[in-house]
Image (cartoon, rainbow, N blue to C red; front, side):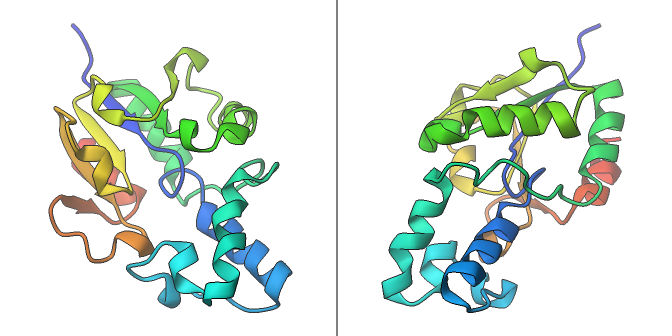
Length: 176
């Protein structure tokens, strides 16, 4: 019997890239970038205009994705899901070409139970053939044929078109 497939985004679903934006912004400008300031906005939209180019450049910088914090409960729930489903990591790495090696090494370190063959570095996620896509960016559901599950993040606070999951425990409740 074939298992159902779940495609899982990396940034803001498994890896906390917002923490890196906040860290580097504090380092570079000695200002705090709060989660409340990020509500409904991308990081560069939440800062003064003169700081926006720096925030837009961060994801292209070497090392930005190297050692991101792990989203709470993602390892445990993903391991449980992998027993029941076929799991694919689908990350839009094409947008940030410097991220490939860092993302690959991060996945191997923190999710060693997932086979490297199931890592998909892509641009348009509508090509992914899966039953579910767990992602923090609603535009990735455009053209996706399965069920989109919007992983809660500050920037998608105002998105209402898709089923929202607020953390990995809710994913577990829904899919396990």
